[in-house]
Length: 134
Image (cartoon, rainbow, N blue to C red; front, side):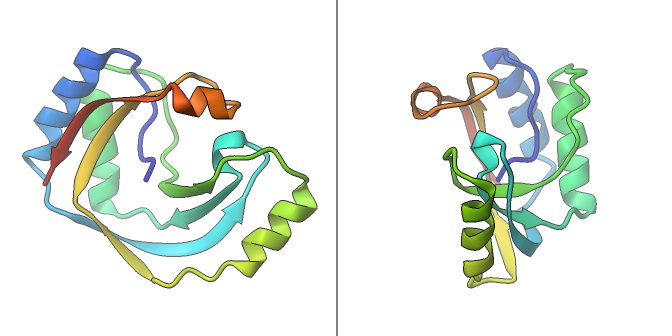
């Protein structure tokens, strides 16, 4: 699930995750809907409700990474990365019924991404730079 986009420095990501993960236990979020957008990395996605824990985690990562990107928290889980017509995206989103109403997240990964990510090759170039479990 994407909860923060910011610093491009691997050392900052590692440090931020190490500092923040100690203060957290698994986070449960309510699934709101399956949405779609024209953004390549959010073609189809599950949108989650925010709660105090995920807002705190987002803020702590931003602060620990010393990042000022002003990322707007919209926790989501991308289901598909693809360029396709809006009508097709809408039909697909409307046809998907998530088999869960709540999801528990028990790990963090910092991923270095090409920004903006616009193709399969960009996604294949992503690299995990830090991982921590709660």
